[in-house]
Image (cartoon, rainbow, N blue to C red; front, side):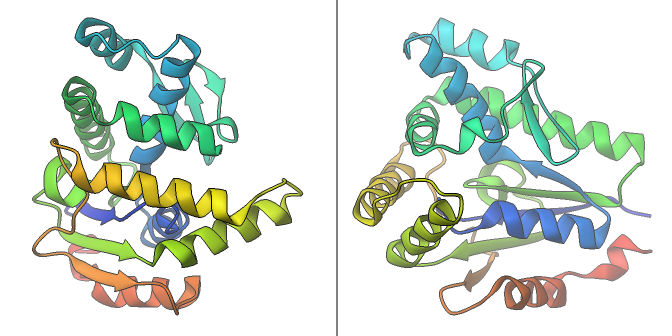
Length: 227
């Protein structure tokens, strides 16, 4: 049996986490939320005043322990699953991801995590989602997908999600934050957000989650997983 790697990239708020988690469960793969890993660093960074020295950032990246358990995200042994999903942390995550030292440390952490799972033999593969998985972290991934939707559609989804949670939300503020983050992610000098040349691009603007999942599953070569 081979260990398959599936990369799912795309902009903020497009639903990558939900899609990747469901796909991993369907294929008996480990789910790795790389976006949550950056958010964990952003949370710690913000609490310490956001210093930008290379030495501090290097130590922050290397010393922060991040892991996933029972669909929860832990940072230095603390459950931060909900805390890291705020708009403020999203903005900080975009900022901290601009630093080359942070991206290099995180790339190593992500590769090491997948290697450990492969050697442990508990899963048939790994599904990773982020912004540079198929282009930088795992350019040799067996399958690459780029999930996209317009900023307006992503903002509307986020707005409705927050309202369902009885959280006060302003659509224009959410939209502005998404547009700003898109600009930062696409124009950073290190690992800018873009679809890999061999990625399958899926516009989810007019698709529900079940339709997206069907598209992904039809594209995955299951013979490699169940060989």
